[in-house]
Amino acid sequence: MFSFFRKKSPAPAPASAPAAQTNAAAPVAAHSALAPVATLNPLTEVSAHVPAARQGWLDKLKAGLRKTGSSIATVFTGTQIDDNLYEELETALLMADTGVKATEHLLKDLKRRIKDSKTTEPQAVKGLLIECITDLLTPLQKTLSIGEHQPTVIMVAGVNGAGKTTSIGKLTKHLADSGASVLLAAADTFRAAAREQLAVWADRNTVEIISQAGGDPAAVSFDAVSAGKARGKDVVLVDTAGRLPTQNHLMLELSKIKRVVQKADATAPHEVLLVIDGNTGQNALMQVKAFDETLQLTGLIVTKLDGTAKGGVLCAIAREKPVPVYFIGVGEQLADLETFNAREFAQALLS
Image 1 (cartoon, rainbow, N blue to C red):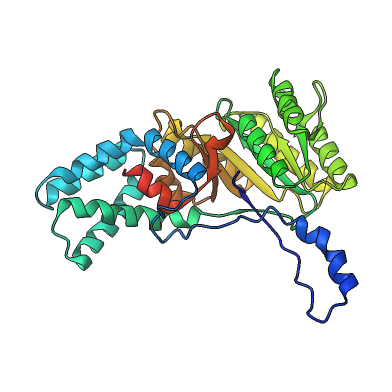
Image 2 (cartoon, rainbow, N blue to C red):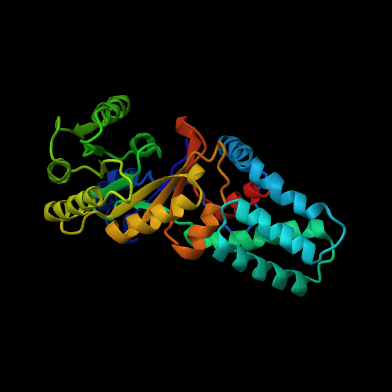
């Protein structure tokens, strides 16, 4: 099981500290199990020694993005680097939902790298493009931090069908397995089955849930944060109603939830995550812009990169609205959600 989270580590005890103080700190150190075992350097090649579980996940990611990769790879089958190659590559990138601004940026960066490296073989250009995409996506790479606040309040938004509640369930599982105590807030009171769906995840993960049948979403969120503080929980995950960014009255409801959460804890929410469907292309970028305007997003979860997803939209997000990507998903299974790594993604996109 991978650890997805970075927990704020306690300060090390002074060397001269008495034995009794050292022993007293032991339970705190044990609670720091959320720190990742290892972090891949995004500027190095993905190692052949990647743990088997993550390697299996990477294989799924490559399979999910194969359609995009094949379309782009075809560009490099010619015999020379010329205007035709650049035109075909521009078309392939646009078809991959990379967007105009990101495509222009990548082509300009690629031409510079080709000139600097004196590359003459089209096949070698593919490796340079991987470097371009990695550099573009690296600013999006960030680790979710747990432990600086108690509880860490995470508000999760997204349109219906993006996989929001399922993603919350997966995060809950991994948080609980990492030793964090989690409280769920079923603030998606508009959708009939949302409360029941979240309750299943709460029961499966043996965590508590605050829920009200037909209750006010903001009130449920307030109660959950207040309960999380009173019960000493590490994390409170708030599931909000799925909505389209064009539904102004529902977007205003999200703003209300955020304001009410701040009444329960002036520093909260500490994370505001948006779940986006990787199949929705440039529409995903529009969602990021709209939800960020309303909520000031701190991170993204990109789901469903196992189907017809083109994947290039992450480049568009990096260029036009660089909100960090905490996790990406390639399926419905628990292990199908993993931390985002820029180099892994670039290699999978062009595999």
